[in-house]
Length: 364
Ligand SMILES: NC(=O)C1=CN([C@@H]2O[C@H](COP(=O)(O)OP(=O)(O)OC[C@H]3O[C@@H](n4cnc5c(N)ncnc54)[C@H](O)[C@@H]3O)[C@@H](O)[C@H]2O)[C@@H](O)CC1
Ligand SMILES: Nc1ncnc2c1ncn2[C@@H]1O[C@H](COP(=O)(O)OP(=O)(O)O)[C@@H](O)[C@H]1O
Image 1 (cartoon, helix red, strand yellow):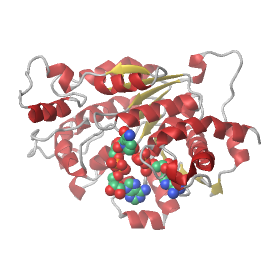
Image 2 (cartoon, rainbow, N blue to C red):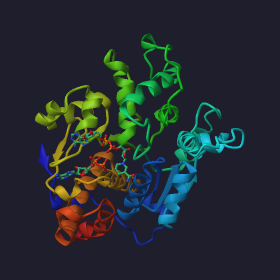
Image 3 (cartoon, helix red, strand yellow):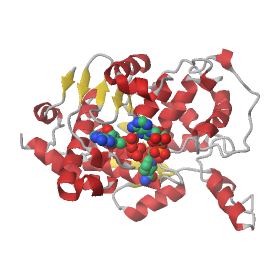
Image 4 (cartoon, helix red, strand yellow):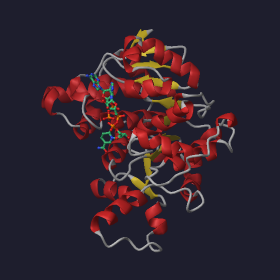
């Protein structure tokens, strides 16, 4: 077990050759954001650019792409087909305003069922072109944990037709779409598609919650699941508790043990967030000393995901990218807190302090 240090992080920073162009520094495909979480798509995209990635494509629903484009000219967008874009012309919205709003919210999810996996097919080329894929920040797999079980029953149909699934747990009783199904079907098809992807894949937020549902359906059985070969997961303690089917208190009492265990079980780099973030690939374990309570604010986890993706894009290995991202994220929070206080920093402020954190590490 090792504490991360300035010197260690300095040595991990990827080179910036003079004779270079944007693709020298890699392409992040960020699949993120949903109608209520547009900010997550923005924060995770910009932070990848802030650590040096050459190109970021945000793949999301058209309305999220529009919102992010309105905020920044720096991110390329790939608007995916949604239930709304696919069905709006055929189904005239209810004239009652509230009903229309509810329908619109439902239709803003990335559609899979109605249009034959078009959203995933749309991503096909980009999945192969990207140097790294990040999935989940604000993706809204389901609108609450409870709804995930309804979503899950539907996605089991895909599960049972794929190598990921363990057929004996099939449950077709509750194939009920009476509640919005978020993006769970889209996510499942994507996960299947990514099995053979040789590049790093980072799973965050709702992507982790969906994986938890695959691993522990109804808490009655364990399904085998294989993540892509070079995966990184970035759970906070609650998300790791869902993944391991344990209480948060137990996770927090033995943070190193459970981070290491999850890394071995999932064959992934695991970043257990919080004060003294723990990073493990199942063999090496690193503890992060940077960061403060300024980071305990909505959206800072999305910034971290983008930073790790941005380093992976530059050819840094998953474990080193995780160490770089976590250390610099905390350091940016420390520098920001000196200017703005631990009370007043916003996740969007943090973006502007990433370059100062990098300068401080370079000055070692
Ligand atoms: N501006 C935006 O668009 C934002 C979008 N976000 C996205 O919102 C989605 C849902 O995030 P939520 O914050 O609602 O859901 P979370 O899964 O983060 O939180 C759900 C529950 O977990 C508990 N929890 C969270 N962190 C914990 C910790 N460190 N230790 C113990 N328990 C903890 C909370 O108390 C809460 O009850 C994610 O996809 C995320 O990416 C958030 O990052 C916030 C900002
Ligand atoms: N008190 C703290 N000290 C250090 N780091 C913190 C603290 N609170 C939160 N963080 C960091 O802030 C980030 C919060 O991420 P997360 O819980 O996913 O929030 P969100 O989903 O709202 O973005 C993580 O990187 C975590 O390590």
